[in-house]
Image (spheres, rainbow, N blue to C red):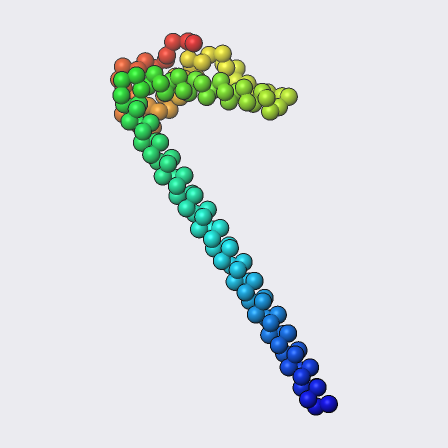
Length: 133
């Protein structure tokens, strides 16, 4: 009887020890998975930041070359039209600025912002108000 009792007790100890070790292993696995995920997200964020910085450097360089500001004007105008097209697609109600048809004024405003942000951003020969499109 004593031997049987001690056998059951040892069995219970072994089961409890196994459950404890399994819980620890599962917890460590979850911890490592969280670390791996966080490291991956951090690496992705750094890669995006580096790519964005390089793109901005290239844009800055391109705006200084002949015709660069004309390209900026065209891109701003394209994005302006696309933004309003997307707004119209997403909603039944669209609020538009009163001078939406005056694309030249909008581009002049954007160029004014660039000029005030960095006086070297625009060449001297770029007119304040581009011709109406």
